[in-house]
Length: 211
Image 1 (spheres, rainbow, N blue to C red):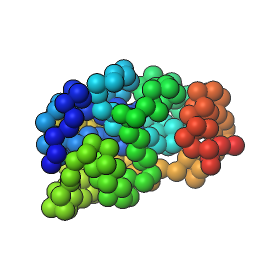
Image 2: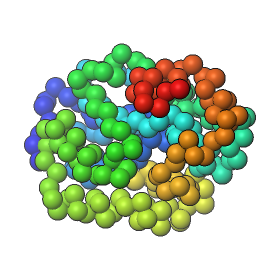
Image 3: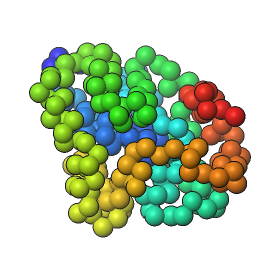
């Protein structure tokens, strides 16, 4: 693997909550790069860092945020989870710095079913090489069924592994394939559409789903 340019001090794995950040964080850690890797749900931009950011449709992230705590998808719970989503990373997607050249955006719906998309993107962005052997090992170790089996040892989402950051109940019954269009009814959907910042995020990053 190639060394990163010396001007970069850290790789910051920044993402809104419930957007596949832990998966990408574990890929980065397994690449054994020679700079610190920081996982964060808050965005504080510096030109001296690389940022690897995962992005998922906000409504899917919010549903997943409810499900991690086994909360029913009531309008009240969805609205509270929307506020938490915006507080923990969501609002930062609207920062102009997200478009900087040292920020990589990885779309959840692509990498969750195709890790090679993530590997190829990271190779190009960080100027590294991820070997076929490592790719094969990562696909096995980070397969959703493998992760789900691993996380069953934890009682709930508040308990987690300090090394990998996998939490209890990290994987919902949808196993990464949450689809708000199939899950939410009109009243539930309206409770999320009321948030103007969510609509701005959707318009910017997911225009094909805008109403």
